[in-house]
Every structure is written in structure tokens, then in C-alpha cells.
Image 1 (cartoon, rainbow, N blue to C red):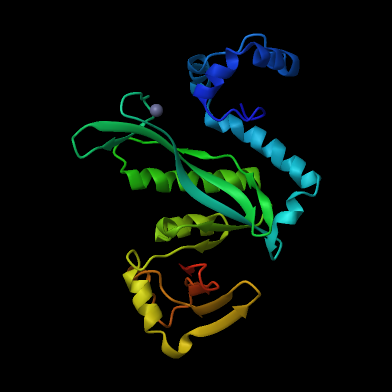
Image 2: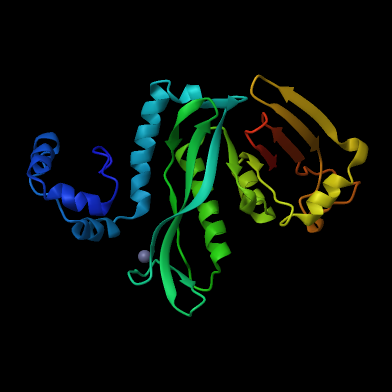
Length: 272
Ligand SMILES: [Zn+2]
């Protein structure tokens, strides 16, 4: 499916019934009879996702040996890894024992599968390099947030196991900027850039607005845009993490970055 860029399992079904395509499958891959999407799902359902790790690692090592990976070096010989949750299956009827469940307003239940996926990215490189994703699986008594957080902790641990010497800066959206997840990132020795939204981090944003003379301002100009950056170091993420002034401890950094684009191109504000 990936080699031939078949967009869906439904499209695969019409592909397999075409004589020309059957010939291509036979000559290219030696496949005499293509399985139906149901058969493929039944076979793949039995595969432990962890078994895919070795495949991802093999491809990654080829990119490392071929010096392709070097092009993605972001800063201080570190690579930028974008991590986020994504949904890849949802149905009001079809489900399996590992399905997550969502209760709708009308009382019906829908079933879905999500995963945490991580890809190495670089602002100047068009391609991304995916690492092995981690399924978000519901355990007994867990809330949805627990499931996502536990899956994030598992993927970080596995990335460290699979690539122990790879220096990473993890970048994630506002849902990730919470103390347990930051502890997980630090325990794996990873640097990070996490989004933060005013609605989720009232304490942090109040501290930021009260920082006064501790606020630093930088302006970066190029042909396309003017970027105004305001940042404060040493802010607390939330009140419960406040530490006494006399105790030395590493504390999060607060940044505000405002990008101003040329007229007509819109304006974006990003806060980290
Ligand atoms: Zn399922």
C-alpha cells in the first residue's frame, strides 16, 4: 500500500480486483493473490506494535550511515523531535478489546484508536523521519488523560532505549506542559520546547505579566517577517511547583514569541 501509494483500504479493494494491478503485484512483489482488507486487518491485529520497532530502527540506522540524518541537526548537535497524539480509527460500531470509548451526548458510544507519534523535523528540510509510534491503550480505571500521558511516558522510554546516544529536543503542543510529563522528559535526559496557553496556565501567565524589568526583548528581521520576542527566565510552571528563594533548583523558562508577518499575510502568536 505504501509503495504503490494506495490511499485507503477501500481503494486497495478496487486495486486488487483490477487485472493490470494484479499483474503489477505479481511481477513487482511476487504476490499472486492479494488479501482482502478484512484478511489484512485480521492478520495485522495479532501483531504486537513493539515488533515494528526493529523495522523503524533499521531504516533510521540506514539514514544515519548515509549521512542523511546529519542534515536534520537542529542546535548544539541535537535533533528536533515533534511529538503529538493522533487518531487513526473511529467507529460507532466496529470495536476490539483495546478500543478507547467515547460517550456521545445522545448516550451512544463510539470507539476509537489513537497513538502518540514522533517525527524528527528540521525547519529547512522538507522530509521528516518518523520513529516508531506508541498506541494509546486504555487500562482498567484509567481516564483518557492518564492513557495519553502513560503512552507519552512509554514512547519517551522506548525512544531512549532504541536511540540511547541520540540527543533530542522534544517539541509538543500546550497539552504537554504539565509537571508529570516534564518529569518524564527530564528523567530521559531530553531537552524540550513545550507550548503553553493562557487558559491552561493562568499562574504562569500572571507571573510573566508581573516580571517587569526581568523581561528581555529581542527583534529579528528578515525579508519576509519581523519577529518580536519577549522572554523571562526562571518562571514557575504553576503555583504548586513554587520553591523557596533560598533553595537552588532548576526551574522552567518562560518565553513569549510574537511573529508579525507582512500586511495581508496574517499574524501569528506563539507562546512557549
Ligand atoms: Zn479497537
